[in-house]
Image 1 (cartoon, rainbow, N blue to C red):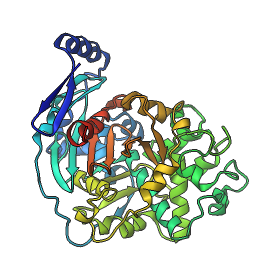
Image 2: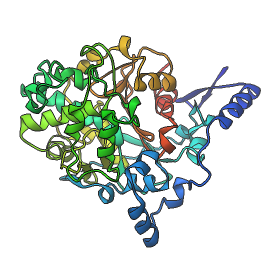
Image 3: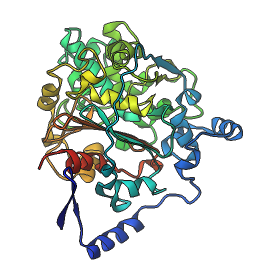
Length: 441
């Protein structure tokens, strides 16, 4: 391998021509999607009246999880597929000054699609990659829309879990929440279940010790399968189907704090606790504590279960730029979008201190992160999928959503996607953008 520098900021590693061709050939053949799927850019500028009616009628929770053409429609139209609560914007829009860095498109990464530049990946129909934005030092450095319009909302899916983590940190700082207290202290309906000895912090960091891992989605009778069915609006569910019913089904796997077992159930529990102790619904808490303070361009939407439960664990949507503004709150450029700190000064130190690299491997998400980013000393905490040794933070969302925050380089990378059946992960581009363009060697 040799290093190639372009200009003063972009440095990336390339393979020899022969090695590149061999690697790309192997990887290109490794990943395919059904031929019947349309490229996401077919509907970049919207849907016809007939198509809209068809997709509304055709949507199912199963299609949403598969991210086929019907599911891709649903990701752009959350309020048409599930009941929603509005997270309101307020006040002047915070202007993101443009400082284009087109060389970002030349960043190279290796994924199951092959070894290629970001620009090439975005044009690959197999990626089903819809939009990307990069903000550096408070300025918009790169922004492309391939499968969605800039003013449209799109599902964050699990990237929204970080909102629950931030709210938990805030109310704990205010003395409203004891992270060491057992979950039933705040949710008495869980007394007498396997949640009895699970401290709130164990749920917050996905270490509840319960058998609720998302690698079990699809297993008949498993609580996470039932939870997902309710979350996505799977057909045939009772009108009063409750996420809390799935929570009560959880069985013990290990002692709390011993293993990392990523689960939307944990996030739902944390979000529900926050609602109980503040006596406010989550959508109002996000509005008051985050959204209206950050100069967002548009309202966010938070989906509700059939029983009216807030789905902070993954069913949240917004514009791409507003997702980037949210990410900026974790950087030193927070004051570009907000007049006051939303993320307190000690938040990052809490996240880093709570990270547990020694228990990271051996589970669905931990192993996925290692496969994507390499076997480096990553950990997880406060609902972030990966806490890197260099201080960067990453949160994925099912079907390819990305929230990548690099406090050290003051950079945020976000993207929307509808990767088919959750089988393709191109998150490495986010980290490579930071490494190849912004991080000093």
